[in-house]
Length: 137
Image 1: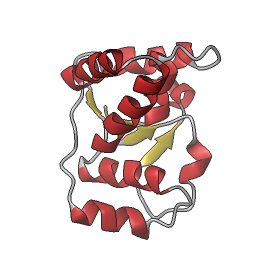
Image 2: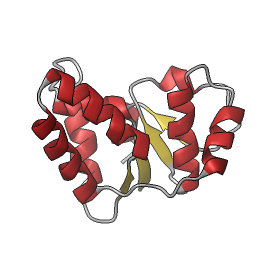
Image 3: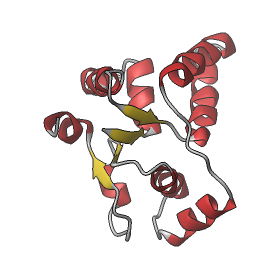
């Protein structure tokens, strides 16, 4: 399974958000298994750093990012990725960037807690909640 993991899944896991922690943990554990190709968008790392360094410390934010890049891949992106994101017509540009990055790496899915934010595009990438992702395996 090739998939791109949205920022909110990482935040749920790292910050141990009570309501979402267990499913985010399952998503991450699943993607760490053999024959999985997990991707993380480059801008997710900067978003994580910004949020984690303000809620914890810069050192903890860096350690978290080092851990993530040790088991994920970052899609090659370019100007065409940004142009594609703009053409998707999503209300949230960050979500559009996630989806365009998923297309760049030929991901089968984007795993996100905000499935409804991705509706109405012409993308063929599946948008799955953590529960849907786990249920499809």
